[in-house]
Image (cartoon, rainbow, N blue to C red; front, side, top):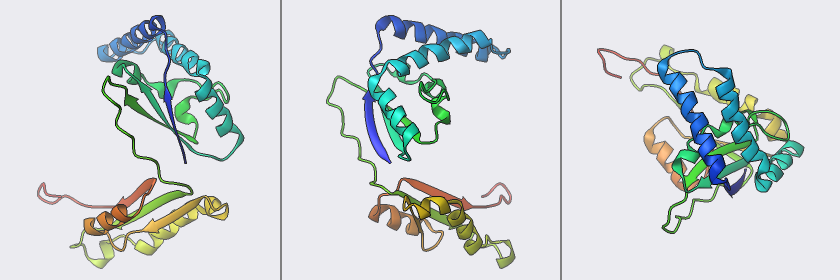
Length: 206
């Protein structure tokens, strides 16, 4: 997974328009009525224009469309309201899909302050590293427990194409305890934690 930090460069006039569009969307939702499609499209078009006009983002999306790389895109801007806009709705100028529907792109956000920006932790290097933890309540009898081996087989089966390409590594905790989880995450740098488990409530206690 490749980490890209991109600052959103947006004109003040455009920022004002985007905020007004978003305020209209929120107003419709708060009133509980049906959302006017025109209002939603207005917001989407405004954000899509920003994305299409950002050279770095467009180049990244073109790269994602051509290859098999995964990207963690960290959007930054000094205005938290701008970052809180639903950027996942913006259209990818390359594929025409919403950014949230582009499987190779994950978006995070970071507010720029006047103080020196804290260094963001670097992503784990490739290939994609996944930690799997499977857990059952310790006081459940054998018949009610999860079948660990079958759960593990399902996870491995799901990632088989990536295994063949050498693009993924899957690791498992020794057991379903928090101590085992802590040992793993302190000694390794994973991209994803996959938790599989179940529980029950008895007399309002988990």
